[in-house]
Length: 444
Figure 1 (cartoon, one colour):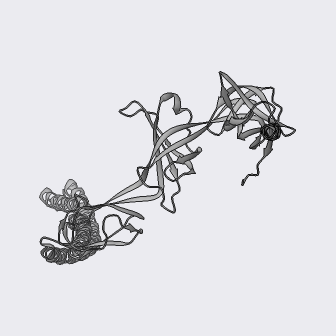
Figure 2 (cartoon, rainbow, N blue to C red):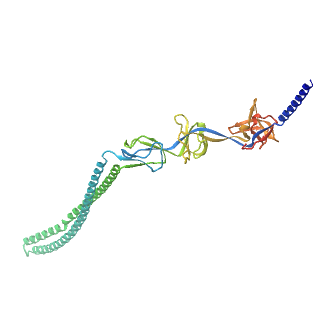
Figure 3 (cartoon, rainbow, N blue to C red):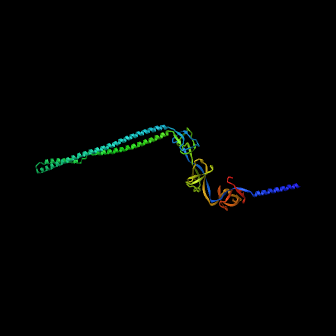
């Protein structure tokens, strides 16, 4: 009996000690937490608009002339540099025959030009000869005019002498010294001399018509010279055209090296070595990956958020990064879907951004000015109440707040919360108002 009493007494003391230690531990419980400071500033909401990455430049590859794909240096998916030789095409058809025909055409054009030059030279000589004939005709006309003038003067003197004799004879006939018949004979001779004088005075030199004919021949020769000049110019143009066609035929007869017009990736390839390719249908396509285009379709209300030349952040979820872009195109006309296409350019030197990748335009928008901003993780909602835990003298103080605007990382709130206050961001779900806390280091 005494032994049982001692055992009960020992058990009582052990239980009492354990209870006292447990209560002491409960009273001294300290919760480790992580904290961040409260900020007071404008709360900016980033609006996201879904977009997609597309190639800025797609270049179809086709030869200038149809032919056989003699050499193919690339495969689908290969990356190529601008100017790199992609393939060699051997011309098909009668390219060699075309070269021979054009060579004949060049020789014919050269002959025509030579003939035109000879004709021009002959026409120029004809003009000189005609001018010389004009000079000769003018000299002859002067000589003939001089002779005519002398003859006219002689005839005038003869007339005057004959008329003087007739006048003297008339006096003698009137006096009856001589018969009247002698006077009549003398007057007739005077009249004949006068007629001869009149004829010589009014006569034009025959050489004057020769001068006019020679001058007409000069005009005709000059017209022929002008025609010869035109013919020579036409022959020169025909020769030039024939040489151009010959060069084209020779180029078409040579193997054509097809080079990459841009740096990028071979996205399509629809031919193999030995296949026939044409200049009407591309056999390959190169997609330029730098720069890339970020394209979106926006509503009329969203259109005002974009301005050409504007710089915007673009989120690329598949790459888990954000890049800068420059708006390059803002349509003022809706497409078939009723939305407005918008495009922005992104540098892609490392070519990590691929066509078809999903993206988002991040459009900053001021929502609340000069407000309290807390980490979104610090906000607790419980039983219809919203609050945060502020750390004050190593204790968690519950502070009721109202959410004004919220995003993934930060939330704008109003409440009795001082600026630069410290709020709990990790461990707050296990806290109660007044609990002791210890702030963990960032790497804990």
